[in-house]
Amino acid sequence: MPSATGADPVIRVLPEPPDLPEPLPEPAVDELRLETVLGALSDPLRLTIIQKLLLESERFDHTCGWFGLDRPKSSLTHHFKALREAGVTRQRQYGLERRSQVRVDDLNARFPGLLELVAAWTPGA
Image 1 (tube, rainbow, N blue to C red):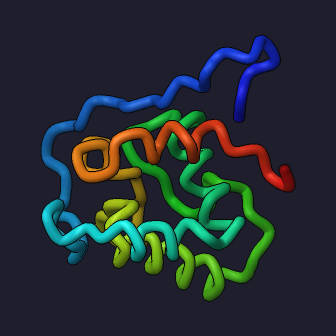
Image 2 (tube, one colour; image 1 turned 90 degrees about the horizontal axis):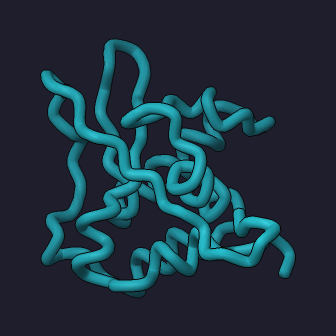
């Protein structure tokens, strides 16, 4: 969320740890389509998820429980799948849990400035 000083929010990109599981299926960078990405981001909950990942990440990737969202697991699963299938996030399977991260480099390469707009978004404004 934007800072009280009016400065642009800082997108956090944490280094990739070694020995990561392979990502779940996702579109390649050259297959990312703006209308698909914007469609995924048109839902306020998904926009909130991405903004939180961009600005508040504490680890390389996060489980859905980290977000503190009061929604049924089936609903959250749907939202995280929509983000992954649109190419906004990358998900990896760690045993029984899936962890997500924003595809910052890929999205910046295809749609420069998009993530800065998401980071600066104010809910309800």
